[in-house]
Image (tube, helix red, strand yellow):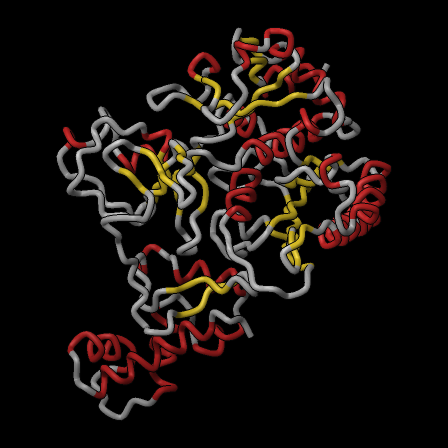
Length: 464
């Protein structure tokens, strides 16, 4: 039985309680199903709830797939959930809040967030230009000088009502929707049917909200591989949505295999769980091939598991063996920053589209603030392949339909991996080396920035 059934069960109990108090709304809901009756039981209330959510009976609701229940909760007729949900990181699922309220509490202040000088100040005194403004009440602030490309926010963030107190031309909801576009012509490829269908990618990271509507249809495998220690974080959802989300993903039709694994254990860094996950990905790759499907094209990992910096870590030998096995199977393990991966011909950089720019026009992109200033390294600039790596809308973790604008973002790796999946749709035997070389040859060179990847020209070249 799906854990979501408990959400509907709680609502049925609440309905019975309110019906017994003769509250008008509860009585009206029951009358629409049973007419004018006073002798209704909890079982009857369960039937009412099932009908309201589009099921013929409670029995049908109980037997439904968890994805069907998730979609029912977010259906148009139920935009506001009767029973708000919260995250359970252990199972990657959603449950009712303990207090039954579950309202999103807006903060007027957040520790370390300076909304006068627009910077974040950490406890050790260091600063960052990126501001976490998710679920904040900003209505009383003058934000006209705020750089929106350096602010994380979501649909719950309350902005000043006066346009003069917001950045010029900034409409939060419109901007959030617009930035779902991966950019640089990716959606044009989707219209041609190059969207990752019949291909697969894997991701290894931390906690994942499995049932988010943006990607749950793509999620073919979820497994937790570690010692069972509790964990938190939102990067897993950002990675999957940027790679294969149905509205913000580079490869929106690709199958996703997700492994949740710890990077540390007993306060020490470990590669052991990532190595175990990678071995399982190799097994799944071979199973797909036996079933007549394409294998898993790429594994997306944020941190540099193959870096020399980690060669003496716990599990390093297991990781090296797993990476070799993946390479022998034709799986690209894309991890960390390529300029630290031992291959000095492979350099990458993150670029971001200007706030008022055209997401499909490379001329409107610039290097992100936390990247190497390529203007100081002219000898490297022509060997640096640039991908959108921030300033994107991705999934949020507070609801099954939540989205947030991620300023610094984690979208470089999933953009690379998603584009590699699209490229293999055209040339199934494409290697990572060929992908990078052709990307540099077909990209749009911009002095002081690097070679901005051109997905359409890349695909054209692969087609021959």
